[in-house]
Length: 231
Ligand code: BT5
Image (cartoon, rainbow, N blue to C red):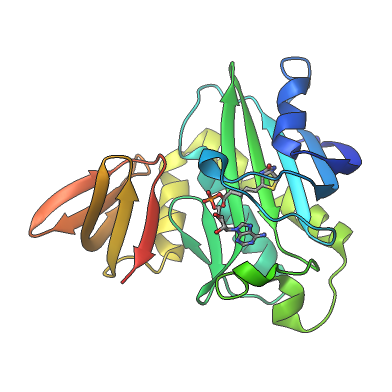
């Protein structure tokens, strides 16, 4: 993949910025900002994006929009962390965690036939007080600052790799997520639009959904606005 990197000092949200570049922006366009003033998670939730973190969005033009694309981002982040000696796991569907704390979140959005993959990764940035219990940065884990450019370079390398896997064999991508999620066998509470489910995670199925055993009945939880908590 040929990446074309646009660098900004400050922006509302790299996803919003990238969205405005579509349809003209070619696949592989990357928007990176030092700070976001209104970084977003899913459902308009706020994403803390002070200077020092990696806040970026990548424009992809897959043959079809597929919810499993989010795994490309999650796997690439996990591999990048591994390059720095950090052992991370994927919290289905869109988070990367280290131990009990979130280090990265992915937000994929579609516009026309393009996908904007937003990736937020806490690198050297401060974690706001209200998130200290649940979030962590690479600097916090390694006890030293990390070269942000190096992180970006490695992340793009891994994104290229996993996007290639997605294009060739998305089931392989899911297999890898299954390997790297510690959720299987765990009891979880899933919050969805319609309410909540409590059950044991059985598997991540080939289409990317989560299979949950709820009182002996297997329920398929589709990717969407799902929040999941291990209980
Ligand atoms: C996500 O949403 O995890 C997706 C985050 C995507 C952020 C990137 S940054 C570049 C691009 N531009 C954007 O505007 N967004 C993308 P969600 O699963 O909804 O999680 C949001 C929740 O994560 C919040 O409600 C907080 O609890 C928590 N959170 C917020 N900021 C955080 C941070 N910096 N580190 C860890 N957790 C955070």
